[in-house]
Length: 96
Image (cartoon, rainbow, N blue to C red; front, side):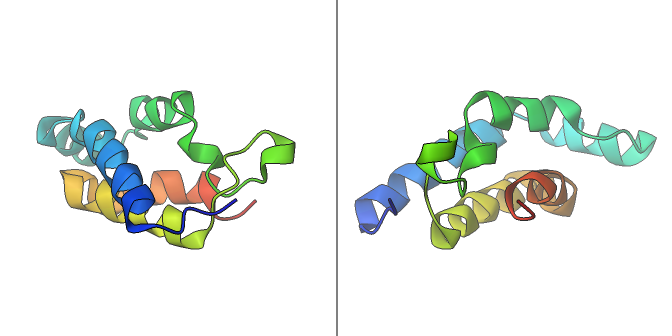
């Protein structure tokens, strides 16, 4: 399955934005200052199923595609997470 409509992509964008924006700029400053890995952020996206966005449904994933994952990643980067948050999720979403 792949979200092919503008509405589907808008829904992914809204959900990703909501979750990413729940982490404040202070959270990201602290991660940058201390060098700590953003585990809370990664766990929040995993809890909501986003780590499996490109995994086929028959293997327990969302079964969506690269376009949908790119929309997710765009919202993560725009939220203030920047490359710190984007890289943290990238490692789980794209390599599999």
